[in-house]
Image (cartoon, rainbow, N blue to C red; front, side, top):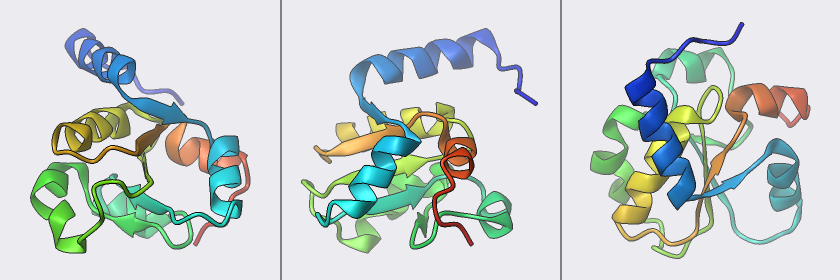
Amino acid sequence: MAKTHSPKFLQLVDTARSEINECEALDLRRMLADGAPLVVLDVRERHEYEAGHLVDSIHIGKGVLERDIEKHKFDDEARIVLYCGGGFRSAIAAKSLQEMGYSNVFSLWGGWRGIQAEELPIE
């Protein structure tokens, strides 16, 4: 069931989406297979991550992303894909990482639902 979001939140998401790179689950499948380094960040809440997540993804909740991202020592040029439930929170998070200087960031449009639909490896 799709969630109903408030107009101001949707405006924030639309603005972020116009300023970031996005991919879909099929693109993520290709990235996972292309052999190039890839970091996949799950920015959902801890309970969402614990209920199921993409294999080898790293959990950093959107609420602490800016505070905790540097603890992982990713290069500013690292290829990073962020996902949430559907692509809304990850779009805002991707914009934030871009503003922090990460230059190769993607938000997964479709998020967790897209990962499941594409039958990517989950645990």
